[in-house]
Image 1 (cartoon, rainbow, N blue to C red):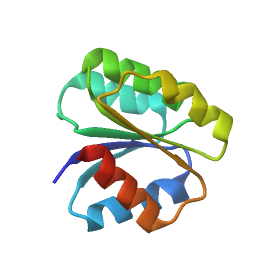
Image 2: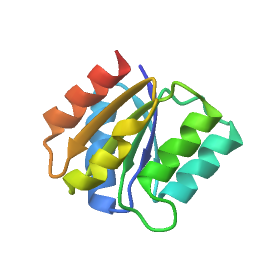
Image 3: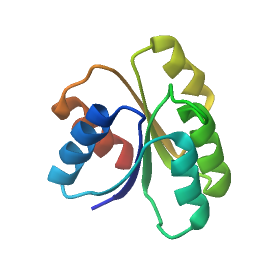
Length: 120
């Protein structure tokens, strides 16, 4: 299955998404914000297939994280999560290999289905 980098500053959301994706057999590396996630990407210690990120985070938001991820690995698959539709629209112009967006709150089935679609 896929190696997924998850970035979200909300512990409950991180845990929910991690458990959901791991139940589908994915390997999920969890980070608490965009800056930590970018460090993981820059370290090159993991070859991630997908970045799943909240859009609204302190320090480095999900849009900036996605932009940096795409610089490091053009064609990276990205899933943006947000409770604000306007925030998700900011990511619409990405040249990601595949981009998925989901509005919070979402169900476990919805995030699992979006990740499957984005990876396919």
